[in-house]
Image (tube, rainbow, N blue to C red; front, side):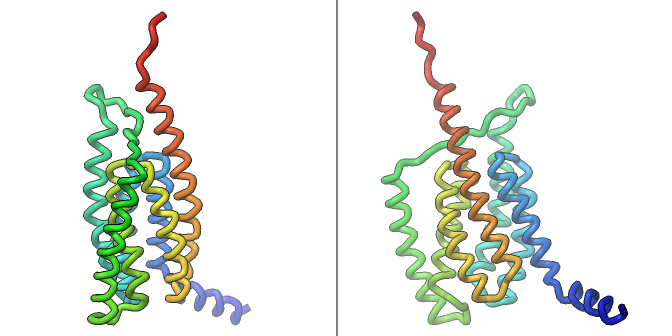
Length: 214
């Protein structure tokens, strides 16, 4: 009995509690964002503060820098969504979701690829970063995708699906088990978020159609 109790105590002592807390807060962020809740941004702020430290500790330097950027974007996103969800009468309005053209996204992706390649070269040759190119590519695209979330651009979720799938490989290689599980769940949430926002976007488009008088 004593041995079992000792094993349980050791197990809980070795749990990466900081990573687990960051994981729960990140899940809350994605779930709330998919539902269009303003409270996703406070959850994002605290989760990214924790992940900035965690990624720096395992030398995923670009991921650490990315989460520092998320801190700023969490504040901006809260301000931006507050602006769009409160009417003058104090009531809550439907999310103002927009969709940008495929041609626009292709051009943006090509530009981001060039930036990521240049930054990846710098990280690979002048820092101790692991997986310099792959980590940099996910970081650059995540920076862009985060901005799309703050602007309520429908296609942001498609970016996140790809980013999260690639990130899963990185975190498996670095032994970040809770974070690997988190990003696996993120893929599912991003898929849900896209379908949810697509429905809201289509409903908004229908509501904006002018009434045809008989």
